[in-house]
Picture 1 (tube, rainbow, N blue to C red):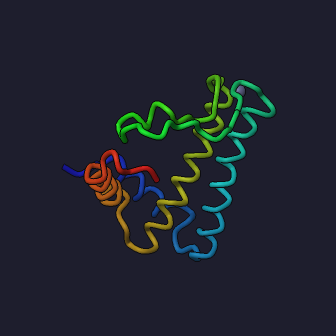
Picture 2 (cartoon, protein in one colour):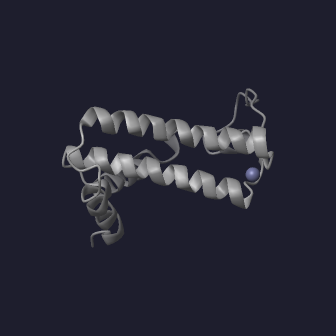
Picture 3 (spheres, rainbow, N blue to C red):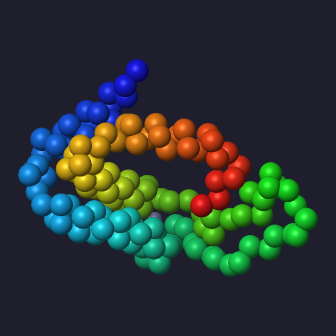
Length: 131
Ligand SMILES: [Zn+2]
């Protein structure tokens, strides 16, 4: 069964003002959207303060199994996004999806097919997916 929501989203994007835009325009808009997502996370820490970022090298014992590894990894964040920061981040991720769908439309790629292929790849890699 096709995922109608992602197909519908991609079609709406195709019908939008991004139709017939240059790939250069879409690539630079997409890059800008990625930067705005990053900025929303940073601003949640540095302007709002609802989260904090504390990055350090993980301390991983030598003789642990691959299954034990996740318990030694960290997101390097503390706290939770407040409602305002959550909405900002959601909005910026939405714009990123918009330009991603625009890019897919130029090359006649289907976002849902890409989701499926990635899901299959994750199933295949399982615990070995550390990228
Ligand atoms: Zn906040």
